[in-house]
Image (tube, rainbow, N blue to C red; front, side, top):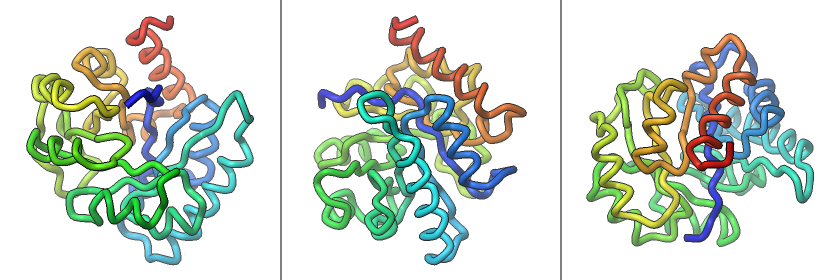
Amino acid sequence: MNLVFPPLYAIIDAALLKTSELSFAEMMAESGVELLQYRNKRASSKELFEASQAISARLSALAKPGVYAPRFIVNDRADVALVVNAQGVHVGQHDLGVEEARAIVGQDKWVGVSTHSLNQLDTAEKTSANYIAFGPIFPTASKENPDPVVGLELLRQARQHTRKPLVAIGGITLERAADTFRAGADSLAVARDLIASEDPAARARLFLREAARARGED
């Protein structure tokens, strides 16, 4: 897939936030992050809708046509993504399938899918998914029941199994960023390392700098 994929995929995880979802989304966007996902596993449908709608509207307002257009992804819920005019939805192994989610959000939106093994990745490769997330690469505390760690070596193998954009997820920190890019990731999905930082905006800029070095743009 010929797609210049954003190198940093910021996860707005409601369970970890020290500020509001909207404030964190603004910090990320103003730092140059082009891809953001809202994840709230404990919210009611109404709460998820209201928070997603606010984030979607704010990110749209921050867009600069031809210069910067942050892409907003809703986790799990294709219906909410559609209603709030998000740019896509991300589904897991226990959510709607890629094609079912695609039928809801439409052909012009992104559908991403989480995978945790090469077999799952091979299945995702045959779908219309715009990108494939693979992990957890490292141990993670961001999920209550994380899947087994796959590690950098399996990430290298995963790179050989797909031409779609490959997003590394799980335990990604700034210190691990360079190694993860070298192992074949097109993008790093990061939650805790950004949210827990004293200055999330500055942390995001450091991730983007690491990405530029990895891509030979620095």
